[in-house]
Amino acid sequence: MTTMTTGLELQNVSLSVGSRQLLSLSCSVAPGEVMTVMGASGTGKSTLLAFIAGFLGDAFTAEGRVLLAGKELNAVPAEKRRIGLLFQDALLFPHLSVAANLKFGLVRKVGESPRERDLRIELALDAIGLAGFGDRDPASLSGGQQSRVALMRLLLSEPKAILLDEPFSNLDMQLREEIRTFTFDTLRAADVPAFLVTHDLADAQAAGGKIIAL
Image (cartoon, rainbow, N blue to C red):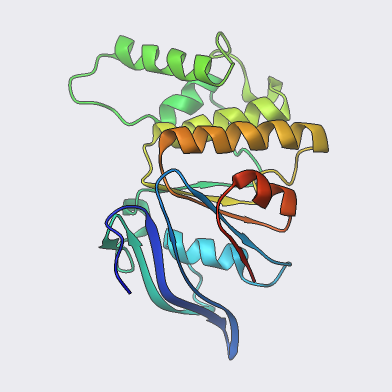
């Protein structure tokens, strides 16, 4: 298989638990694309994300290669893979303000002053429709607002790829559609490859990319 020089690529990946094979696939995700893997519980969707991110549990056996921008990641520790994850829960730090949560993910630039960092946070809040919310307690935000902060915190860490593990499943139907649209539009604008696992066909259709059914 020819290796992509950009994007995220899985080559001949096979995941098993004991003697049971969970999945076997090869695929590539271009920058700005959101690829979806669908399947019922137990088909290995979240296990696949753990393998890509680099923290697959010892109970599982994996074969195949993970490449990002042409570089193989199999031997790279999870914290150095530059892969971001978005989960069902926003997982904001409850002891930090909204602005401090965003600062936690912010990649510091050489020579940047504290005021310049604060300005970047202000711009980030404005981009997600939460200008003036920096001093707020995360617990005071709605579920949709928390989801937007979690996504922006992830993007501020400048990941090279993003994995989404059922990120909309805890939202009610109306809010789910709103946050889904916001998330996918934001990811496409960021021009990073993204990998979504879900059991909801509406999520897959909204993502707009290729769909793999397990």
